[in-house]
Amino acid sequence: ITVHNGRLYAGTDQGVFVLDSGGWTRTLAVGAAVNDLKSYSGRLFAATANSGRIYMFDGVWSVHFSPSESEATSLAVHDGRLYAGLGVPSNGRVFAYDNHSGDAWMLMRTLDNAASRVRAMVQYDKRLYTAVFSAPVGAAVYVSTPVAATLTGGDGSFGPETLAATGLNFG
Image (cartoon, rainbow, N blue to C red; front, side, top):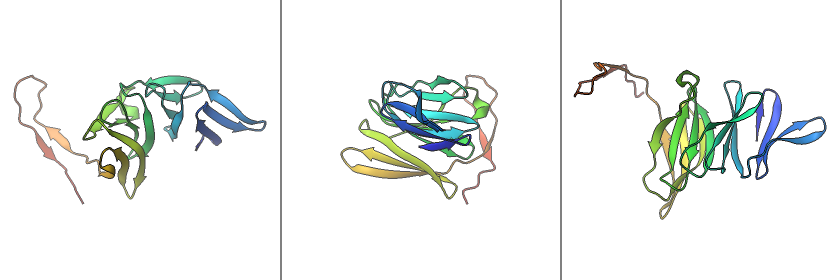
C-alpha cells in the first residue's frame, strides 16, 4: 500500500486498487498478486507475481520490466534509484532503475543459491537493506552502500585495459 500523487493505492491478489470518493476502484488487473507498490519519480510501480513483471503507471499502466524470474517481490527507492527484488526460479536477484538509464534495468546483485529470494527491501540510514529467504539456512539481511566513483582508462576496445577508480569514500 502506498501514496502516489496524493492518492492511496493498494496492491492485492486481485491487482492494484485506488481509493476515491466512491470507495476502492481497480486500476490494474494482472491475474496474479501485486506484491509491492512504490512511487518513484512521479510514476507508480507495481511488483507482481505475474511472470515477475513490474508495471508502471504514468496515467496508464504498462509493463516496464519483464525479467526471467516468476515473481517480483519487493521495491525500494534508495539513493535516487528504484530497486526491485526478484525470486524464483533462479537465484534471487536485485535490479536497479533510474531516470537516466532510459528504460533499462541494471543487475545489481545475484543471491548465493537457487533457493534464495528477496522478501523485502528498505532504505535506512543511507543504506539499502535487503531481507532474503534462503533455504536451507532460513534468512539473511544484506546491507548495500552504493559507492560513487570515477573510472578512467577505458577506451572502448575489446582488448585488456587498466582502469583506475578515484573518489571512493567508504565512510
